[in-house]
Image 1 (cartoon, rainbow, N blue to C red):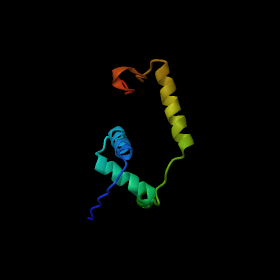
Image 2: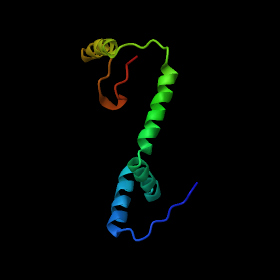
Image 3: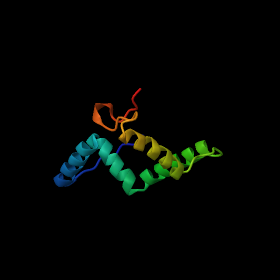
Image 4: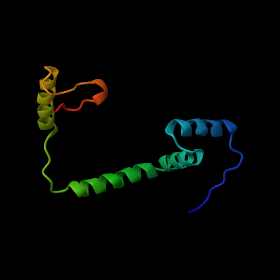
Amino acid sequence: MAHLVLQDVDPRVIESLGARAARQGRSVEEEARAVLEGALGFSRQRALEGARRLRGQWAGRSLRGSDELMARDGDRLSEGSEGQGWDGGGAGGGEEKS
């Protein structure tokens, strides 16, 4: 892999890059790479390639519509609001009771 050295970079740019890296939980080097890739369109290209892979993995499968899934989950959740098997909060994080 190639290396890149930048000289005469404004200290404010380095400081901003460091702050951005910290917010993203990355090193300054990783953040600089992400910024460059994003500016050059490589991040978008990588996302499109991932979407194509997923589309290929799911091709030919019968999938339910979101309206059907929402109706089913809505019924399940409304049962829980009456105290019939659904823990809508607390430390359980919304798990069904046995």
